[in-house]
Length: 123
Image 1 (cartoon, one colour):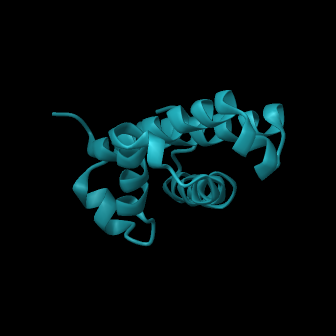
Image 2 (cartoon, helix red, strand yellow):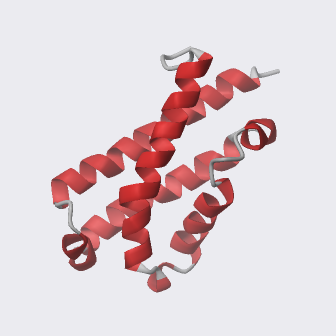
């Protein structure tokens, strides 16, 4: 049987890596909505990271998600679903807000949880 805590920590670290990749993409392509709005490669690159975050969230234990109900798990999974199933209808203003506000907040929350659990480093 796998240790749920260890698995959850590993997943959190992977999610944080995708959050950092989004930060890197914003730095690389330009930290403006105008650039995001006009650059399809920028949009697609960030979208793939969000999709991966959504996939990873599904692998966190139900107990962990319930314990950390202040994190908007449902909203994150919903964004993943829009990106996967209805990409042509993505609201770029909302996507940019998620990338520049929600993703850094998610990263901060997960880093805080890892730090509190003493699991910031590899197990």
